[in-house]
Length: 302
Ligand code: GH3
Ligand code: MG
Ligand code: MG
Ligand code: MG
Image 1: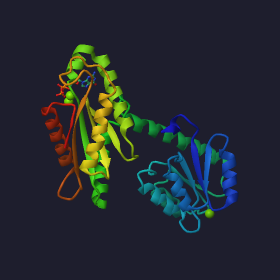
Image 2: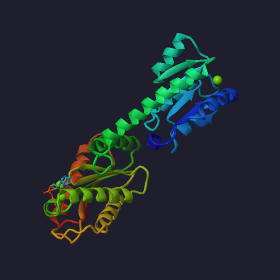
Image 3: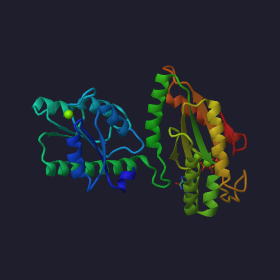
């Protein structure tokens, strides 16, 4: 999402250095340019931590050709939203139709006109930025600025399928702030909102592995997905989260549990199979949360 504020990055993929040089020179005043002379390298850059905002992709290259690269890019969740513009000597209408069917946003034939390439890149990058922004608005919780329930639902489904395919364990956490109604009633809704923001930040800061994920589920409830973790490992992460919230030290003189804001956490883990559903895992975590509340709050149950 850094692309929303910084210079956009264009990845130029072509096996001929002269083409790369020409395009890179033309693009570089307005864009950061990355280059790759083969498909393998292009795929690596596309899913790296610093991915491009647009890919200019040659078709005829040794080993992986551009069509195959495009197909692989569109298959991978990490690169499927990156616009691909073919720039190629293959200029029959069948070729062009094939390229567009593979999911490319545009198809430019060689010899190309540099001003037209630049204008098309500009338009596609503008559209990509708009899409990124919309995605943010759809998947980020407005109050806490962490992912929202919609994003959680989507990720739970995909992590479930991935874990099932790989026969790896996964776990989820459901967290609920203790006595939060009393907090709101006594300190006011604005303070309540501040507390939710601080809690979200504390939870997000506790995550250590890139795949771990936390979202606001709604109200004063949060959820986390911990891929490739046993229930036992997830309980230990949950304990860190519980401790992180307690040690924020947000005063809550009206809590029945402590003199600061605390939360209770329910944990459930499984190795996903055809016989079970993500909803059942969610329900198991919810039942554990209920037990944590019953047992006195400010604790983790599984
Ligand atoms: P428990 O320990 O059993 O979880 O008790 P609780 O008071 O936390 O639970 P309850 O469900 O009774 O109250 C949740 C409260 O959370 C109700 C509402 O005032 C507050 N709340 C929910 N969403 C928001 C929000 O967006 N902002 C603020 N300030 N408060 C919220
Ligand atoms: Mg070529
Ligand atoms: Mg609640
Ligand atoms: Mg609560």
